[in-house]
Image (cartoon, rainbow, N blue to C red; front, top):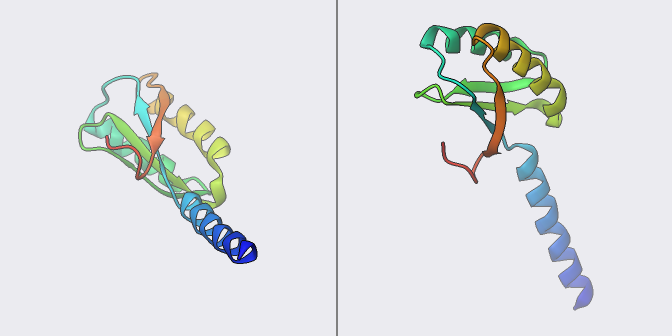
Length: 103
């Protein structure tokens, strides 16, 4: 019975791990950007090698990014530079994980 419980826990852990790896992240923009800025920023971020998908919320307050294989440090360093350059020194701060955060 302990073996069964251990196996079931392991399966749950594997499922959670898999779900986590497909979770995107939300980042708060430090300042108001225009729709044109948002379009330019997204065009460049979506061209980055390890970006699965990127979008900015309708109110232009949050950037959502999902990467391939958890490549967040590399992708977000580049995304921060893009936001700063095209968004008039706009900065990003982590806001939450997809599913646990509602912008």
